[in-house]
Each structure stands twice: as structure tokens, then as C-alpha cells.
Image 1 (spheres, rainbow over the protein chains, first blue to last red):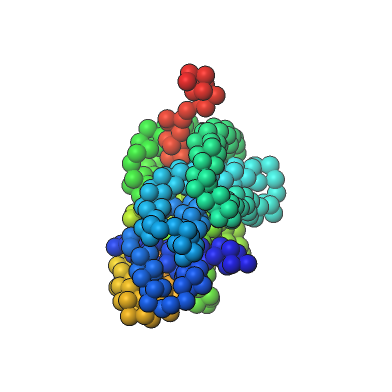
Image 2 (image 1 turned 90 degrees about the vertical axis):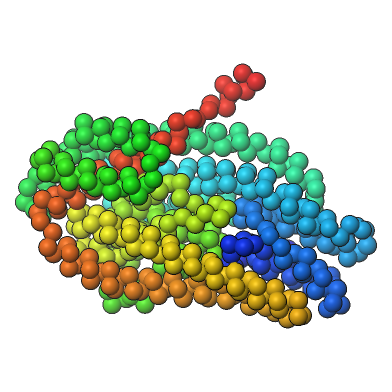
Length: 258
Length: 214
């Protein structure tokens, strides 16, 4: 029961995100019910709480591993099994960076773009093949697919870390997250290539009648190809610059009557 | 635009997902765009604008101390303005997006100031813990969320109203040539987005081949 309560609290990890110590109060908020139950003496509890008020920052999806291990360490310190009172701080400082790197790379660098690509393909397909009545499917699939993996991982990592403690690190390292990331990137590349194909097929060859302005606008597949090449070659440019460049490019083409 | 208060609340809830609570990705343009589009009866425009922003800003994620531009506000404002004033018009939708981008960057500055204020709340909590006021831990968390919610909702409301009036006024005076350009941009921007997305794959490694090499 307490584990589920802690799990719900983990969603507040960044609620008081600040530039000085980042997730420190969020971490303390998650830990507080456990510390309160372990230390009945207020002065003793104060010392423990102040130990956890220092800098803390990691990927919020991976934080549950650290949270569970720190709670286990605090349990051991309170019961006298562990003498080193600095162990919880050591767990936090040693693990925060490595697990954040895994989380950032997999969840935000791979899984989120992957699910976005599926949604983008669905949007284009629903305009090309399916009825527009199915347009709502893409965002729903995006949210459901993303969160099935995200929430399941957060819950699993918390519960298993409580049970396995230090051994959880070995489990995470054996998950082959980098390998899975590479697989998702390749499948993602295939999906986005399909999206580009259907986009060009749908909008690249058919002249579009602009009923409002009473004239024809011809989206040309050759122009699309040129735009695609420009944006790919200058992919390092900041998105906001690319966005306004795209608008200026459209003005020039519009002015030239292309 | 009669639903400004409700939209401000929805917008603030969606924006909270970026950093403050959960990270369920309801803040991503591909979800919040169609959501506002659906509410306003034009899911097509919401999806299209959401898809453009999602692809062009595909790498915008809050990592470490970096605070990215609020894509939720960018997409939501564009969808709300275009669907409220010129529903179904592609050129009006692109113009709304062009206008919402600077507002989203303006909001980023407000967000930065808010996060600096969080440091003060954090010190207030720390001070409380030292004095034995442990309830400040929970209060600090709820205050952080409350201040975020208030400042974001107010920003949404002000920008929806004043930005919306500005948008409507400027759009009425746009020459036909510019409108044609926006119409073209409706189809060109996703292609720019595709290029930006594919750029991320330039260093892709094929795992099975790599395994053999190892």
C-alpha cells in the first residue's frame, strides 16, 4: 500500500524544480512519509530530512530506482543494519547521472520520437486512405502507446528496486536499452520514410483548389524534394530559424508564382 | 473566444506536464493541437499544426537545467486563434502559428522567472525543516504547482485575448500575395519538418551489423 502511495508521489518529483538544487524538494516530498514512519523523534527526523535537501537531479522516469534504493538504505539505517548514514546520499550522487543518461537517451531520445512518428504516419494515412473521421486516432494512439511503456516502467522499476536493491543496477544494465534504442530508431526511420512517401503521394501531385482565394495552388513534388533536401542538410539550425526560413521561402515562391 | 477561462485552465494543465507534473506527454503538440482543435470543432487544423510543431521541434525536451520553449503554448494559441476566428482556413492557421512562436518565446522568459521564484520557495521549505515545520515540504510542492498554474493560466488568458485581437486585426489587412504564401507554407512546413526529423538519423547504427563487427 505504501509503495503505491510513494509511486503516486513520484509524479511530483519536479513540482518545485528550481535552478539551485533542481529536484531536491520533490525528492524530499516523495521520501517524507517513509522518513516520518521510520523516525518518531522529531529532532532525529529533522537531521534525516536535512540530509536529503541537497542537490538532486536525474531523469524523472528513472528516478524511481534511486528512490527505492534510498528508502531501503534509510530503512537499514533506522533498524541499525547499516552504520554508514551517508549511504543514501552516496546512492543519489553516484546513480543520478548514469540512470539519467539511460532515461534521456531511451525515453526522450528514442521512445517519444518513435511514438510521434507512428502518430504522424497515422495522420497522413488518415488523410490519404482512411476517412477524416479517424483523425482523432493518431493523438490517442500517441498518448496510450507512450504511457503504457512509460508508466509500466516507472511502476516496475520502483517495485523491483525495493525488492532487489543494489542488484537492480545489474538488471538495468542487462536490459540492453541501447540495443533496443537502436532497433526503435531503425523502425522509426522506416515509419517516417513511409510517412514522407505517403505525404508526397497525397499532396505532391494533385493541384489544390483554393476556394477562398479563387485560384489554383500547385504543391509541386519537385519543390517538396528541394525543401526536404534543404531542411535535411541544414538540420543543425535552430528550429525557430528554420521555421521562419520556411515561411520566407514560401513567400519567395508565392511571389515568383511557382 | 467566450471560453477563455476554460481554455486557460486546460492550457495550464497541459503545460504543467512539460516539467511540473507527470510528463505523460499530454503537453506535446501532437496531442494538445488536436485536443484544442476537437474542442473548437476543427480537429484537422489542430492535427496539422501539431504535426508541424512536433516535427520541427522534435528535440525540444527539458533535460538538466535547460528550459525549452513552451511548445504547448505555441501550438495551443495557434489552434485556438485560427479555429476561433477563421475556422477551416489553412492560410489563417499558418499565420496563427507564425504569430504564436514569439509569444511562446516570451512565455519562456516568464517561465524562467517562475523557476527562479521556486528557489525562494525551496529556501522557505529548507528554513521550515530546520525549524521543525515539516508541513512546509508538502506546502512547498503545492505552492510550486499553484504558482505555476496561476502564471501559466494568466499568460494563456492574456495571450489568447490580446494576441487573438492582434491576430484578427493583422490578418484582415494581409495582402492576397501573402495569403497565397501562407497557403503554400501549409504544405511546405511538414516537408521542412520531415527534413528536420530525418537529420536526427544521420548517424544511425544498425545493431546487428555492429554486433558482428564486435
